[in-house]
Length: 152
Image (cartoon, rainbow, N blue to C red; front, side, top):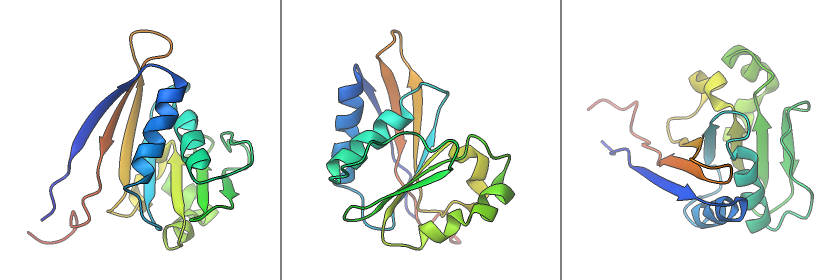
């Protein structure tokens, strides 16, 4: 059985948060799913902006709070979902969110805790917290554990 790994990183500016995303991208493969957890203003969208920039996305990247999912052309494609306005996994299922998990892109989901039931077992979980000042972020990364649902 795979062992889940946790790593905590403290960033001190939006630039460092975006740089962390760039570094993590080296470990991601097409089909990766990232679940972002944290309060409003904790740095989730800033992190996605870093991923998008590292992938060469030329468009402005903002949280898709009202459209729910943005698709950005890149290699691999970037799918950015924001579940803030949905109630639960049934709503997320109705969006067709799980179809993105089967694709060749990287899917990043803000407010992912609203749809944990439909997330694949190999999902990366990133927890964002505001630190002791306005620019500090404490980000805990939980690497996927693909055999979580396998018998031991």
